[in-house]
Image 1 (tube, rainbow, N blue to C red):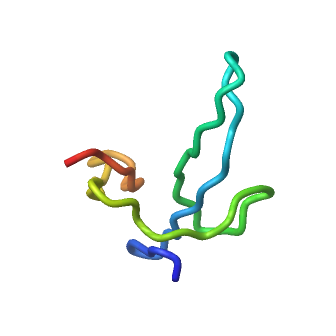
Image 2: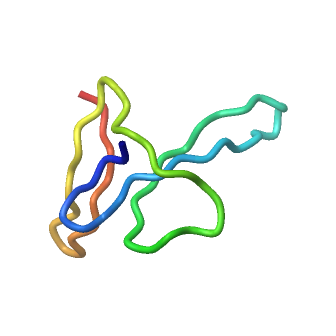
Image 3: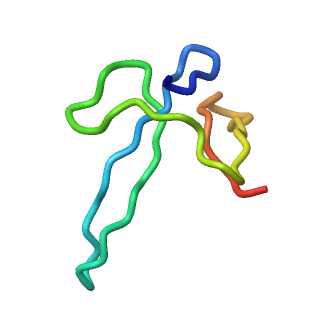
Length: 61
């Protein structure tokens, strides 16, 4: 089940870093992105909200 926060859905996709290592990235979107799939909130993270723009973000506990 996808994590939602005030109308924003959390998505994830795997990116390849310069050294060849693969790492998941997490991002919020109100629409379906071109790549990525809906996901649950990862353990050890909380949701913050940018005071000026209202955009949600993940931060480590």
